[in-house]
Length: 434
Image 1 (cartoon, rainbow, N blue to C red):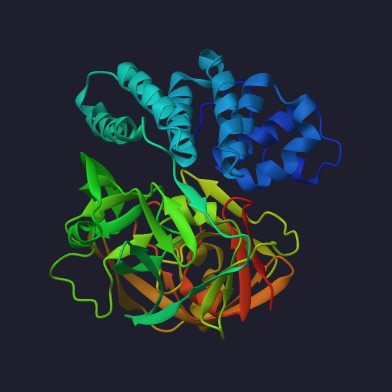
Image 2 (image 1 turned 90 degrees about the vertical axis):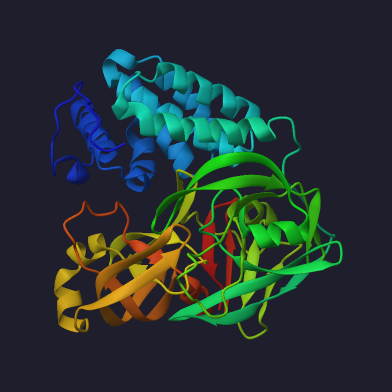
């Protein structure tokens, strides 16, 4: 949603943040500024105080994006319907972009029939040009996904009325670790990476799919990986078990391989547990010394929302030296790594404390990418009221491409740096307990 053509207002820079009683003009300028900057976290904080002054097109757009950011996907879709009433004020491109958000909202809610309807509407509105071909193929892929699951039951988690204990293996992988949990289908047991960075479905190799008996229901699904996009199949199972939890109707993206054939990663397993299940587990408590996860029957103390969503991907909102950071919450990442945007924001610190520039490899589905990095000996983050220290954190150097709109990713080392942490992708919080 960057570079929105919001011609209804003129942009004021640096005025509204200090104004305790902004005028309607200043309030609208500030909202436009936050929308143009895709800063929905700040927008969510500031909008309640000024919403009565915000013009209706901007307010509808803000409500849609804030609701999506906060994981209120149904509310976001309702606001998107109002956005569609203002194509002249907001522009057809903005309305089209918001219906893409509606697609993701429906995917997150597993409302596949409605998602298929939205995909068809978007396909009908695309111009018949070469420039639109990539969008067309992406929408057709999502339509195949939605149609294949439209008549099937949603994912359901059935658990006993007690704390559930799930053993966790910390498996060394490359320069970090994976958290491994065991899932079973009948008498077949399989190691799964516990991955909050895997959106919408579990991710498995064809070999694992055949071993578990996954039913393939759609082909030619485009998915984005580390080194680019590729095609996978879509599959389903009647149920599988995670400890004492029964997971009904889990869905799977099935690839020939999870990493390229020429990339050797000792200890890598071929199955990933994704957020469409993790979100439905509710509060997950990771206990480092006990090497386990606990799904508490009675969740812990209420926690302030500090996880946000963008396009189905979850981000942790935290702070460093008073500065707000937005970090991809990715427990499938073996080690935290900060982006070139972080380097730009904290360049003096990175250059003073970081090591020499070196090449760093990141791999996964789609291939391998290499980045120039400098490694900080430690980075202290404030998460809620607690602090956590990450060790040996690589920072990407700028490489001439546009920077990400987030500050990097926190991986397994965020969890293992504390004795006990709790998080919930439904209620959208991460809490350091001990």
